[in-house]
View 1 (tube, rainbow, N blue to C red):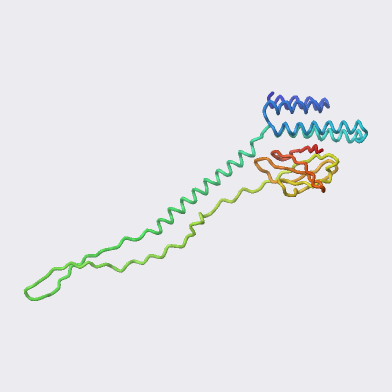
View 2 (tube, one colour):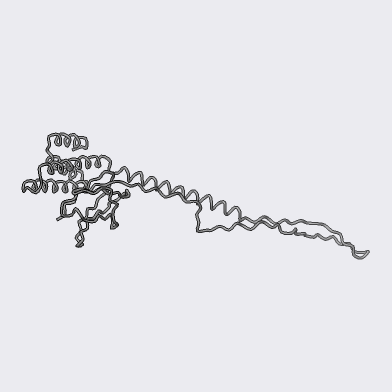
Length: 250
């Protein structure tokens, strides 16, 4: 199945309110193309969908709350399909930026090295030969050649250069922040949120949903829910703007 076919089929299934079928199709696509983080997200959506249906059947969840939860799952499916469209875009841009920075640093180091060596060259000494006639006795005349060395030309001392300093350094790339949505089951609503072990910046907090702001990175990032008794529920994957993480914690 190609990506355009996946988008078209998912749109048709969601138009028919067949959320279960859309999740299964997304999982099948992820397995065919070995997209592991997409497969994990699809499994999380499936678990979340089953729990919503179960809570509604037991009367724990009203019909209105069920519809809200299913709409959020549908948004999550569409978001995962969009992420599958360009999984390597940010990574390639960051790699190109770092490569250009390294090339610039090497060029500046080479210019500094040749300039420093040129200033340390000594000036050549000048030898002036002068003939002088010295009067001796009336029967002896001697020609002598005198080598006269001029006073050494004093060149200004070379300017002190810190060899450890390679010169101007390129500015590090600015940090880009993205917003990530967390879908959380009821037992974990009040859990603390950690990103790679540090407290997350929460910009929105509701009963079933939290939105956090995190720096964008190339590799996986670990988002962890932690209860007051020390229990943890982690999810680890590549985070991109508007990503949705589904926590199906026991």
